[in-house]
Length: 319
Image 1 (cartoon, rainbow, N blue to C red):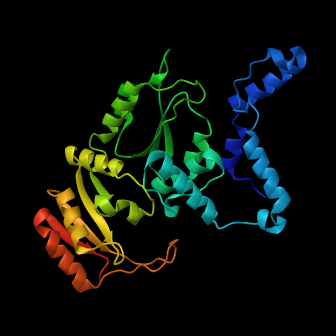
Image 2: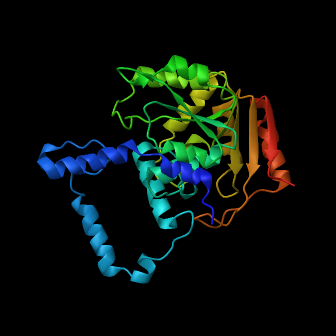
C-alpha cells in the first residue's frame, strides 16, 4: 500500500518544540531536573485545582460508568453547552445561548474547526512569525495556504507594514496569538488597535446584527435574568459610527414580541438603512418549548408599523 506523499512529507518535518523538549529531558537526566528550565511544551508547572480533582473523583465514584464513558452528541453535551453559555453571560454580559457553544478537544481542535469553517481550497491564511508550527498542518488540511508575516525583531511585535502588504483579497483568516507562542510576547494595545484598523479597512463590507427585542425586554428574550443590554447598545453605537454598510434584524416570536415592543425597537434603531423582520421557526433544538411565529398578515402589520423609522423594511421567513 502506498503512503500518501503529502502525509509522508508532513511526518518528515521535525518539530523544534518536540526536539527541545527531548533535549531538556536528556539534560535533566544529566544535571538534575531542578537545574533545567524547560520552555518547550506547555506542561503545567502547578498542581491541578483541588476542586477539579474532587469533581472528577466524584464523577468516577457516583456516575454510571457506561454513561460516563459513552459518546455524547457530536456537537457536545447539551447540559455542558448550556452551562458554558450561562457562565459567559454572567462573566461578560453577552447574550450567548447553547447554540453558540461548540466544545472541542482543546485549542488545536477549535482552530482546526474554525479554519474549515472560513476557508476554501486556494484561500490564504496569515499569521505572524514566530508562530506555533501546528498552524501549518491545520491550514494545509483545508486546502488553503499559510503565509507568514515576518517578525519585527527584537521586540517581536507584529510587523504591521508587511502585514498590510500581504493582506489581499485571497486572505480569509488571520491567526493572532497573544501572548505569543513560542516567544511569550504580549502584543501591545497600540499594536492590537492598529491591527484592528487595518483589518477593518475595506475587508468588512457588510454587517448584519441581531437585535433580540426592546431594551426593557432583552433579558426575558435571551433567557438571562438581569441581563444588561449595555454591550448590545455599544455594538449598535459602533456600527452607526462605522463606514461599513449594515442591517439590523429581529426574529419575531409571538410569546415575546408585542406591538409596543416593535415601537421601542424602532425608536432605538431609528435611522438605520435597513431593518429586517424575521419570522420565528421552531428548529426543534430549543431548550424551551411553546414558542410560535406570526402569520404573514401580522408580520406585514409590524413592517408597516416600523417602516417610517428606517430606510427600508423587509420580511424574511414567510411564504
